[in-house]
Image (cartoon, rainbow, N blue to C red; front, top):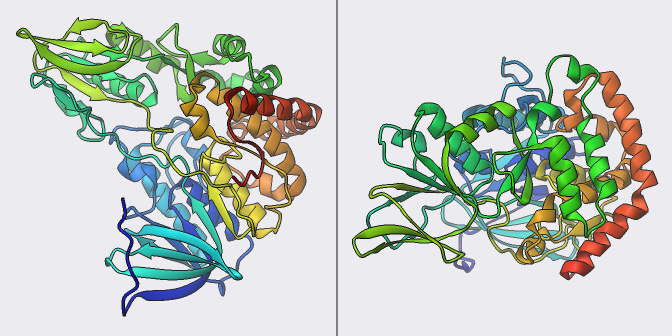
Length: 490
C-alpha cells in the first residue's frame, strides 16, 4: 500500500492539457488517439509506475510471445519496423521495442512529457480540471493539474510469485521469478499449476527444449483457446475461405443469450477452438496453434483437472493436496511452477469508465466497455477528445465482479457481446476514419476486399441484433447481480 505523503516545501506542481496514467498498450493507444486532436502547443504528460514504456510486457516472463501476428499489435495504425513475415509472433523484446517506437512516432506529432517510476496517489476532479497527485521517481510528491485524464489501467497485470508451499522438499517458482527454460538440464519432474496461455507457453518451452522430460499439469477447470490456424490462416484460406474474426464475434454474440454458455462453448470449440484439455470449461480469449497444441499434448504426463491447495511432507513422503481432497505423491526436488491466471487476480475499487464531468476516462475491468485494453484506450480517448464520451450510451460491465461470482465460463462470450453492442454505437458516433486507423483489428489480417465486405456485414449485424445484445448483457447482470448498463456511476 502506498503511504500518503503530505505536501512539503519544494513539492512540484504543474499543469497540462492531458495526463495519461499507464504506458502499456491501452495508454499508448490513448495517446495515439489524442494526437489526432491535440497540437504541439498543448502539453501532455504520461505517467507510469514502471521504468519504461511497455506495461505488462516490461514484467512478464522472458519466453512470452504475442498471441496474434505481430502487425495486429500496435497503437492506431503505426507500422512495425520489424523485418519478419506477417504471421511472425513477436518476442518480448521485440514487442517492447515496437511500443517504444509507437511512443516515439506519437511524440513527433505531439510532444509528451514521460514520467516513469511514479506511484499515483489520487486523481480528483475539482473546479474545471483534474488534480493528479503522485510520488515521482525522486521520492517527492508531485501535483499535476490536467484538463483531462485517461487512467489506462487495462488489465493491471503484475508478475506471478512462486506459490507458498508447506513442503521443504520441492522447489516453488513461477515463470516470472525464473526463466523455466533454465531448469531443462535438471531432470526432476515439473508440475505446472494453471491451464491458461502462461501454462501452455511454459509447458511448450519445457517439452520443446527437453523431450521426454516429465511435465505434469494441475489444470483446475481447464482452459481452451482460439485456434490460430483458423483465425489467422496463411495461403489461399486467407483470401477466400476462413471466416473473418469479426464475423465469428458476431456469430457468438448472436447465439449467446446470457444463460446458454455451455451450448455456445460446445459450438465455439467445435468450430473455432483448440486446446489439450477435452473437458476444459473456461475461455479467456487466448490463442493457440495446432502445432503448439500437438507439442503440448504429446509432452504432457499426468493431467489433474483439479486445483492445487498445497504440497506437504508427511510420514517421509511428499504429496500434492488438491481442492477435491485427493492427494498425489510427488518426487523429491520436483519443480512446482505457478502459472495461475494473471487476469482478474487483483481487487480494485469500482469506478465508472467516465466521470460525472466527463474529464476523466478510466480503462479497466470494473466498468469495461470492450474486452481488450487496446480497443478501450483507443476508442474512449477518441470519444473524450471529440466531446462524445458522456453522450454515447455505451454499455459497461463489471468483469472483476463477474469473475468473483464464479462466471468464468461465460467471461469471453459476455465480452464478445459487449464488443458487438458497443462497436455498433462507436461506428455511429465517430468518423469512419477512426475505425479505418484501428490496425489492431483482427480483420486486418485478411485482404482489403474481405475487410471491406466484413465491415459492411459487421455494421448490419450490430444494427440487426442490437436489442438482442442489450438483452443478453442485462440478463448476465441480473443473473449474477453485477453492474451492467450505460455509464453506471455506483
